Length: 95
Length: 482
Image (tube, rainbow over all chains, first blue to last red):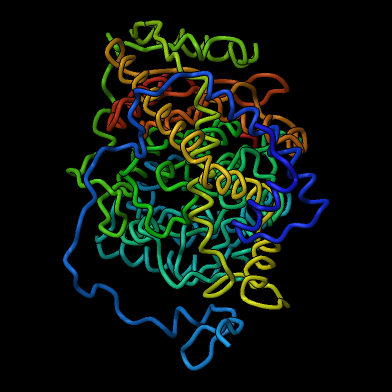
């Protein structure tokens, strides 16, 4: 697998991280080295192996659909970058 | 006093020979004196610590105290603690005063311990040298030219330099055990699911596990008794009967079958580490243990598998940092997308961005099967190797790290060399097995060497027994650089 600068820019775009041309070039060199390391996985045939997503094979617990948290809006919004009238402010997204 | 074990401190407090306020003041003074050099703590808050100490003294006076009441504990800055700046070593959270306590912090508060400060760490726990912290690097107290290891580098430094009697850490690929080894202290990552992840800022959720870091195995047992317990707010927390992790400390080791994976005793381990490990194994032979060669044929895969799965989970977990509800937000931006992009470009450091990009790539359309699913399949092969090995032995030993602490700056420009520091440790995270490191001597430049002890699932009490018996006939764990 060979990564290109455009791949790096596309991934950065998907990850919502601004990246300029020189950063993309530098990142490409490092990611290429890391993917060479990762590629060593491909030497092993694991086609018949079941994927393991988790250390413990336990069933996810369910809980009753009931209120467990009290309203702490003011406390939580006290550390927000921008709030007004109990609402989080972000740039306008709907015209 | 600062060299005392937790058991000694506990009885001094119970017998009123010292108060928690005096003890806390002593450690706060040590931090004031030594932290400017070591940078082990990001935040110290004397007012909160001393108020907790006074509350502990009341508990002690009224006979309500538990074994750790009044003892100062350094908390890794990954654990949310109400009213404390909780940064995770990142600019992204450099203004985040946590509105709530992590499950682990709640348990320590209930036990009446004192939070002596929040320790430095690699940014979002991504690193093996503590050099990726937004708050600057941490020095190894044995040799200030060396790294303390990471990501729990501040915690390891604080315990080694006796700035705190004990500390908490978290371990996603070796972040408790590797710094414990490099700083000559003891640390254990319990079986996945035993310690609550609620309020422990997530890096890779299927691998992250909190655990204690301290001078000795006996101290670790007392700390685990506080830290382990079911938490319904963590969906992977395990519901099990309460255990006393100190119950087996005194058991003799005669007949113990120690498995030595031939892959861990092959090329890659430096000579100085090897000779310290061999001497430690000789001590175990004296204690009556039997050595059995075992094989973990897929051991070499643990690094590539880890560097697919951990970044994949990280890219998902770190998507929550968007500058909307808390944390850093860029000063100027043109629209919402631009706000996200600038906020994240400014708030995350280079290593965190690198891992988010790796994770985003391996999860993206067209690459998911080749990387993410493939890595999950190999993860099972790695786990099966351990299951097979435990048919032949009771416990597995090897080196915690391939070399002693490297120099500050030596690997910071080379991510791959840095990643290989976790060659022996990451398998325990992939499999969920409990694993620990204890100090077993010194290698090149008089830097500490750690013995890695990997147990079978839920065998923490046995591992602590195995470590404690060694610490009864050796004194590496009592040595300190101060």
